[in-house]
Image 1 (cartoon, rainbow, N blue to C red):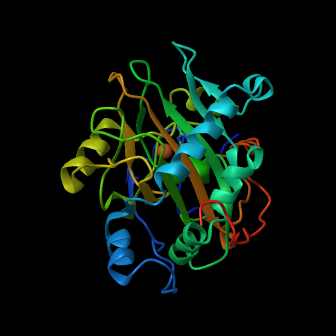
Image 2: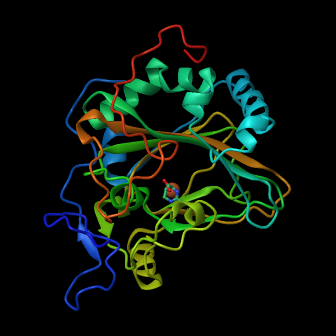
Image 3: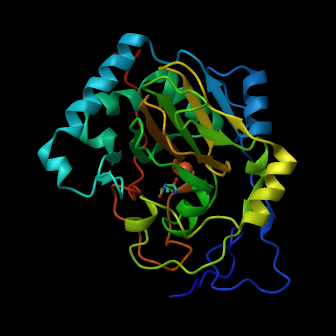
Length: 308
Ligand code: 6CS
Ligand code: FE
C-alpha cells in the first residue's frame, strides 16, 4: 500500500525518491510549544529548543533508581511477559533487549509517568496536556548488548503510528550508570530541526524486525555524514538517576555494549493530546498498542507518587 496522504509535511518511506526531492526538510513545527510555566527555567527551555535535548542530573534518587531496577528484574522474570510481544530479545544472544508498555503493566512505572515534576516538564515543553504514546525499558547487557542505528523516533511514529507532528518528548532515565563506553545514547544537537525523509516502503509488521535491528526508516550514510559534520555529536552520560529529555525528531543512535557494565534505561514517551494519532502516513496498519497508544487520555498528576 502506498502513501495516500497528499498533504504530508513529513513525507517518508517513499519507494523511490523523486529526482528533485530533497531528503532533508526544514521542520515546519516548533520544538517548545509556547511559553508555559513549569519546572524548567527559561535557559533550560532555550537550550532544549536549540539542541533538541536537555539532561537533568539526579532526576531520581539512588533509592528510587533501586526500586525501578527491582521492578525491572521482576518484570524480566515474569513468565507471562516473557511469552508476550511486550518483551523483545537480542537476535543473537536471546538476552532481553526491550520491555514495552511498562507504564501499563507496572503500577510503579505508571506512577513514575504521573509524578508531577516529570509530568509538568513534559507539559511545559509540549504546551498542553499529555499522554504516553510508548513506554519501554531498554536493557543493554554487558558484553552482549547491541546498539541502535541512527534514526529519528518521530520518523517511525509518523510513518508507522500516524503522529501528525513532532509534538512529542521522550524521557530516558538511567537505571545504571551511563558511560561513554557502555552503549550510551549519542545525539546530534540541533539536528532535530531537520526532518530526514527516508527511502524504502514499509513492509507489513516491520516492527518485528525493526525493534531488533532497524533497516527501514533510517537515513542514508551521506545524510548522516552531512548532519554529523554540521551538528557534531554529544552523548548522554551520567550516574544512575539522570534523565534525558529529548525531542522526538532528535537524530540519535547507540553503539554496542562490549563493556562488562550493563546499561538499562526506562523511556517514557509523552505526546501532546493535541497530536492524536491518525492513519499511519506510510499506509500500513497501525502498530499494536504496546508500541503505539491509540487512545488519547490525559495523564493526571499523582501528588503522592513514590517518586515525588
Ligand atoms: O519503533 C519504535 O517506536 C522505536 N524503535 C526504533 C528501533 N526506532 C524508532 C523508535 O525509536
Ligand atoms: Fe530511538
